Length: 115
Image (tube, rainbow, N blue to C red; front, side):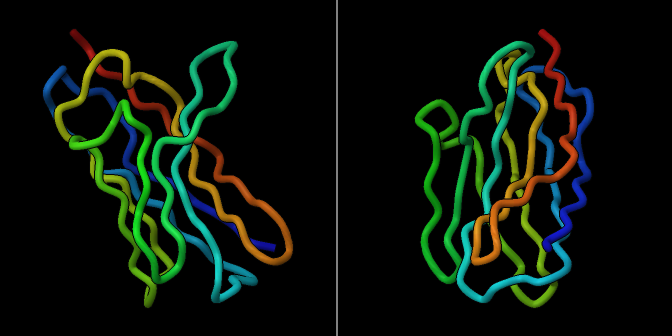
């Protein structure tokens, strides 16, 4: 089992920044993918950014150039630096872990961007 704890969500003005953090613990496989997803009310969860262990990140087109995903492997931390936030970035953001043993999700953290 992998346990994920998120932090860093909140309310910001358009054009502002937030840094989301995700702390992973438990049975963490050395080869894995971690990522950030977001979900609007009543809609499907969608991928925002993902990064394979030891590899490059990938991003949704809607956030390219504004968001940066990174990992601290020594501390089992995942981050999402969000710059130039827009009102349509408002959503619940989830940390995810994909590895041997299954897929695991964080509890979600609310990001709200005001106009």
